[in-house]
Length: 213
Image 1 (cartoon, rainbow, N blue to C red):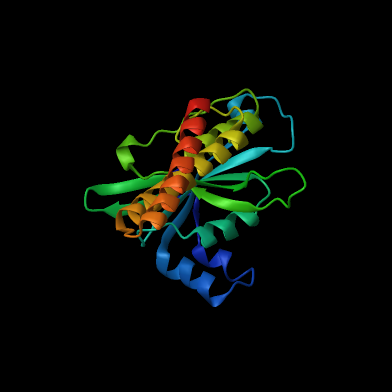
Image 2 (cartoon, helix red, strand yellow; image 1 turned 90 degrees about the vertical axis):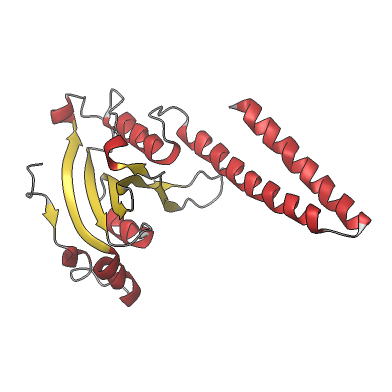
């Protein structure tokens, strides 16, 4: 996309479609600019025009805030059926930083209702952020973009399972940290033993998950 040609007025996202006052404030206060940087499709990537996904938009979102306004990205993503890879940009003490973000269905077990959410990846120095295009189909390129945003790797294989495992590891690490503090604070021997038993179980689960990676 030629520089300056892809800028999207923020107002188009909250005047044409009714939004809450809180979401409007997100666009007005937390986002300084939205711009389409490029489009990935079968013609410009010389890939077969197969599957439901026909193109992927690369959209830059320059922030006034330090945190990504996920509800605003959710709103933008829902307005378009094609995939959108967001590149969020914020200014910090060490210069500009970037993080990739995508809207994706959460991994769920069979029979459960599917829900979508915005995944925001790690922050990188702007000059260090790279984007790899991997795959022989647009769907594979999209999965690779999702993997880069969520797991910081371009490997698109078995992504839902890897996301679920990553989320489980994060939850277990948080629980381990909490139980470790609780155990250190506990004075009653019975309570300390109960907490230690829980901590031992969590650490066994972590070891099992790490061994499966």
